[in-house]
Amino acid sequence: MRASWDIFCRVIDNFGDIGVTWRLAQQLQREHDCDLRLWVDDLHSFHKICPEVAVTLAQQEVQGVEVRLWSEHFVLPVDLSCADVVIEAFACQLPDDYIALMQQKHRVLWLNLEYLTAEPWAAECHAMPSMQNGGLKKYFFFPGFTDKTGGLLRETHLLAQRDAFLGVEQTRLDYLAALAVQVQPGERLISLFAYANQTLPSFLAALSQDTRRNRVLLLQGPLSTEVARWFDVSSLEQGCEYQRGTLTVHCLPYITQQQFDQLLWCCDLNCVRGEDSFVRAQWAAKPFLWHIYPQHDEVHLDKLAAFLTLYNKGLNEETQQALTALWKAWNQQQNMLSAWQGFTAIEETLQSHAACWSARQNKHADLATNLVHFYHDWL
Ligand code: TRH
Image (cartoon, rainbow, N blue to C red; front, side, top):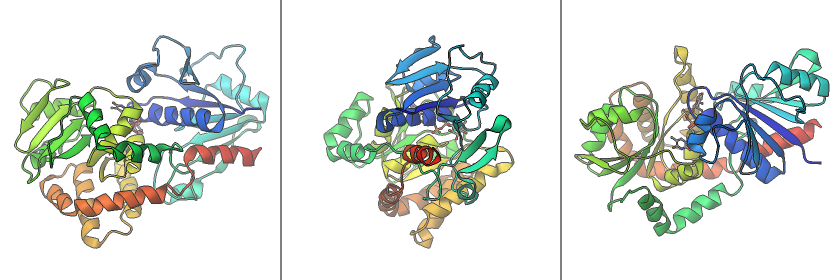
């Protein structure tokens, strides 16, 4: 009998919550023969990264996954049954009526899928139960970078698909041509996906005064206004390119998650943010620059430092310092010029390190597999 899984996702303010839960829902359904229902409270955000989603339908099937619209004070359909496994993504607070269903069903595995962090305390809290009303237990499930955590989202064939894509240069050129991007010989191709960042002008200046030409592919998001201002134009037109010095910038449309992965595979440096693109950049096995989701009291800087402590292992002192300086400048709005020069000096080392990191992380069981194993052990 196939196990039924409900994943509840509340879109906070960007795409990561739906980005993570949509990938997870697809993988559980495709690779682990689960019956999936993905509950999302914002179909408009979902539609931007998955155009097949119809924003007007409260219930629909997308790529084999049942997608249901929910909201905070959601009245459950009368015939709704509770799933065998319920994933409350990022502590999104399940509807009270659904919790009542769980209490009636009694035997239901309730998991809180936490945000990804490399901080050591996550491994200590991973898989810990917390007693809830009505005799229910909720388990805290922490993604992570070691076997003591829930692992990272990684579809079974992802790295093989990456290698096949990059194995034929024409595939890469065709992908870029479809985005109206022609890379010139010797250019560094950079994807840029970040939050609003005061140090963006200094980053663009550094890229425009470089000894090597830089071609930046700008993803949809808050940076385009600032980039337009830096080029002294009112807005960036998709399909156009903007040049200053050794810098050329293209503004991309919204692309699907699969296209997003392929973009990261094409580039020489990936500037990513949040959680999902941060993980996908690691599977792209290219040097990357992470703009962490800013939090109050700068607690996000502890998360950043914890990841760098892990990632820097195996790099010599000079490389560690240069990488840390670049990430620090980007995340703490410091001038990027000297940090960028430091990065270009260690770029080759980082290219081989990124490949090693991806291969090392690939040795850990992935998040979906760990969730399914956790369920089977719990039964
Ligand atoms: O969008 P984000 O900033 O999401 C953030 C993080 O998840 C953060 O942890 C969370 O606290 C906050 O939301 C509420 O960054 P992230 O995590 O990289 O998710 C972006 C997703 O959007 C990722 O799956 C890639 C996808 N994407 C596309 O597929 N196509 C696009 O064109 C764009 C711009 C994004």
